[in-house]
Length: 415
Image (cartoon, rainbow, N blue to C red; front, side):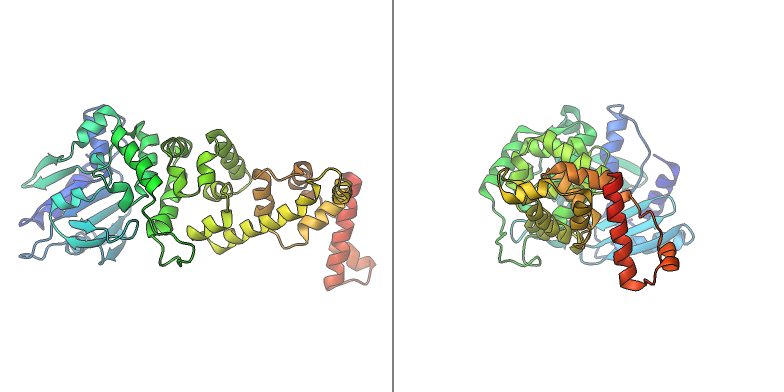
């Protein structure tokens, strides 16, 4: 490993003489993939370390973070402490170190945040999501020893992602989103038992998610934490493979049944098209749900994005006049000039994202929406505001209306 990492770990080890310090998480997994299975190694990246709490010396993550700060005051940009979980995040100029006090977890109810207590390193590994993430490299007396109590190395060799215990999905369904990320990146998939656990748990639906629950009362693993994991998934370049795995496993039903029954090709096309139009991948996915507004509210998306989804419903109502080919409204609407389309789409206070969401949702008629998006909205008035002011006695609101009407008339002219 990089010398700077080894030196930092040596400095931390000095402060943990009466307890154990261990590297955990992705660095252990990726290092084994490199050393044993010859996978490319891009360096240690961010570090995750766990220290066992010592009553004798009062060693914990907070104390070790303070030690590093005292040794490297000019290299550390900032440090965050999370006392509830006994963790500290230290940001160096070159990367981040996450220090955690070893803990065990208990889930009082499916999908809710766990209750924690500080415990042994073995208990800390037992609370993790997958066997391949339940490995540690223990650093003691300048010796590094691999601790693999659940067979994580075997999973790396076989290409399986296996949960640690039979209640993994029940306790925290966001583990499925992480599994899809790991699977797409590492070329792995859920093992047979984990597939059965996933499908059985989703069929039973053990989570409390009634419509009358507020966002604070609902399980965080199906609200905010689920959104955060999805955002992380869509930040990865392997997001398409991850999305495919989620659908193969039946895990999209955590969001919405309509997403699960949609074909992967259809979802991929919607998300790719939406991304080109400036829509986030997560919002594009949510727009394919049976009730996008309800899902977006449950995931606690930003208020402006929820408003866009509501306005898409209004856009759909506007376009619904064309559904019946023999109706008077359909005949009138099909004969709308470009200026009329501009007026309808531009005077309702809708953001561009509303039209983009309508396009990727396949709202009909599609042709005028496409024409407006790619051509009509970019056409400017042939006369500028300054020219109008010089020739006419217009100002303020009247000037804006006059200028807009000139532009719409010009749109009809150039088509």
